[in-house]
Length: 195
Image 1 (spheres, rainbow, N blue to C red):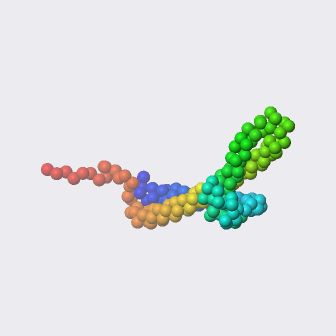
Image 2: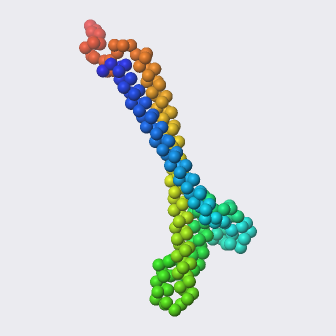
């Protein structure tokens, strides 16, 4: 195969790879933007606010060290959702009868249907565990958004690298003499005979 033909074919393949990487990067960037804005808008609609700075809730060693940085803020990001779910709701649920585990509270309430306090705990446990699950789901989507952003950046960087390599391949194809073979033929280049 002629060296020039190989260089042109490799450059065409490289150009196709650049296009694929640009498309993948664009889609990943769109995925990031969609997931990030969805998480933000959905959390903002809930209007959940962290306890104010200096509140008694933040003085708790189970809550304060994790939520002090967000004191008084509205919950709008995935990392805030995780902190609120794991270090605010989970702490309050753990202080309920049966650790606030819905299945255990519900079973106890069904076994003792006349206990009004336990029946009320079922509702509280259900609401708390549901909200906690939804907040952790928002956190998971924010992680997916971050991964999509890094994938987009990697795709664009690789596209740039391959674009440079394509340019170098085209440049090399222009400089290679017309008759050069890719691997050369041993018959065309015999070894010199020495006596």
